[in-house]
Length: 78
Image 1 (tube, rainbow, N blue to C red):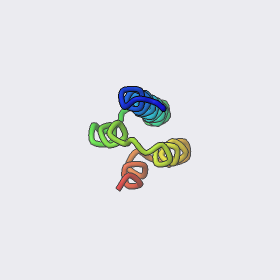
Image 2 (image 1 turned 180 degrees about the vertical axis):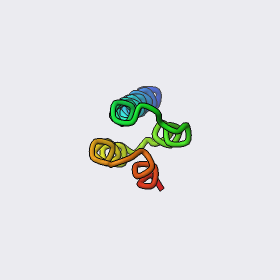
Image 3 (image 1 turned 135 degrees about the vertical axis):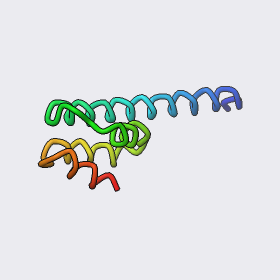
């Protein structure tokens, strides 16, 4: 039977991995946008960086690849 400390360590490790994945996905979205539009409004960048949901970030990455403008992308964040 694992101790409480072992359980907490395992939970912290899992949280760290999830946060790392989200940060990586957010960076991917930002890279796509920078490659396509050069400048990204700070409000868009902040929204992307704050997002922790990997499904939303995957969706945003797809949208970043096909949107016609940064304004169109920003509208999709709402």
